[in-house]
Length: 244
Image (tube, rainbow, N blue to C red):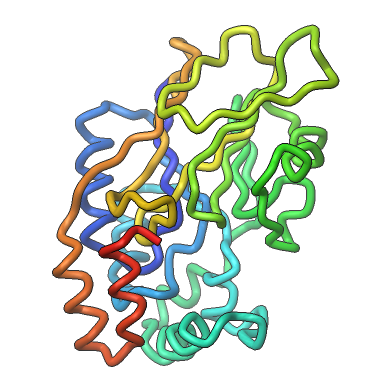
């Protein structure tokens, strides 16, 4: 099967539409989201609606739960907090209900999906190094796990016959041949932070035994304008231009 894994969308419908169009051309069989459908951007309900229409299986991100007041916003940095309070006021009832019912972890076939980490999905930990990834890989019950949260695509690989060392790569094409387990951060659709402003997502083919991190351009300036018109912090638009 071919799986499409959506990175953090963050209420950016232009980026989401570009990714869904790209995945349609890829001919995927299943779509998953690592969460944070909302937050930062200015079209939260629109993005939830697109996720529902596309039949995406999603997990909850911290912004998704904050948007329905299930976790506090006091720990968010100021611009994220301002955007979240705006999101709470702006979400329609259907979108709020959908976000409130999202699970923290999904396991299906060879795939596990969580937002921050697989070992403690409720904590929304960041995986930013090989030691960070060890606990999630130890908990992983499937061949491959997909996460987001940091907005930076990177893959951690356990080689067969080498249980001690953990390999990592930023390569956009990852062969799983010879790997017992893999943990892949798919990056972000709606707010990349690796210096590349293009939307990021992952494609996994369990027959080819490969994962690809794909990048697609979208109308960044259109989303910057949407953020400004909504009265959200201008820095959120500037981050889209810079990919930071």
